[in-house]
Length: 378
Ligand code: TXA
Ligand code: MG
Image 1 (cartoon, rainbow, N blue to C red):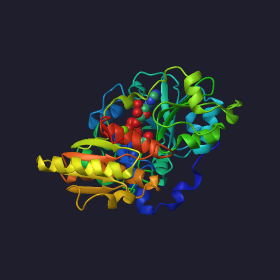
Image 2: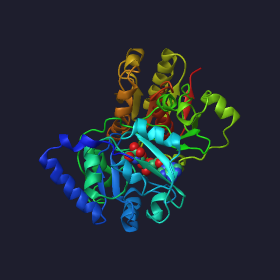
Image 3: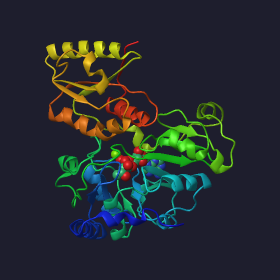
């Protein structure tokens, strides 16, 4: 296998490199270090060192049955970690590494701390597409287990300040690389022996992008979406929906998906409907009633719909940008959820968005943040 992300450290300044070296030394000595990736900030530890990995679980307050993703800087690092890579997985790696795609692969026994895999015989691996992350991984020269660097249940951090908000005093350090680009975590996939790709967690790489590589039409979106084998696997390619109905048995889930995640402190509900006007009217009415009842209200909306609401529909109104730019919404979603906390919002409504492309990951995170509480307007 050749190396990925080659010319990455070129853009880094000498002062950055110094800090990266310090952070790498911390990792090598068994400390935890938070670092930027293109998705969200991760809290890293040497994945071979059980005490270091334990410190990650402790800092996050993370349940021990939720395995960690291992981050690598070079394609060649994969061979030491896993026993085999399905040709379809290899095609996905070719297409999307470095980048926001995690592959769940059969773990090589005895290489990683068993805490990393939570006792599973698989490990999730990804190569982040961020110059600081790649330089850190190279300098540390070890596989780095890194969940998102938030307290368990809190929105993932997209700024170093978010990391400190949640974890100051509990971690060895944080590398500040500015705002994370994608804003939502990586897509987690597992390739089945027959070449079917299961999406265990939707994320930065969309079902449509995956399907383009496996040579099939775009799949449905949301959790556990099978993307059928296609050109890359030598398959014929059928629609994902057909595959779901016809050939796919109950999919394994990313263990982490069963926990409430990403939640702001106030009660959040999603308002959904085919007419934006209807959604706005319903939301405005509910917010008004909540405000009369003494709640501090919050509203998460898309820019196009702002004019559909009365003036000051909530104490804290946050726009995710235009519906037409889901990239912007993804980048800003977690910061928006944290903003409601800053405003002390106790009752929050969020507009739904279409579950296509990145919208699938956005709605997946919003639904989790809302504990699946949805108000349908039609
Ligand atoms: O973008 C990302 O993936 C970020 C950055 C820091 O890389 N990391 C991240 O890690 O989101 P975390 O721990 O917050 O989420 C990891 C997800 C969880 O849902 C976990 O259950 C799943 O990946 N996962 C990890 N290893 C797995 C495995 N062997 N089998 C199934 N799911 C796995
Ligand atoms: Mg997380």
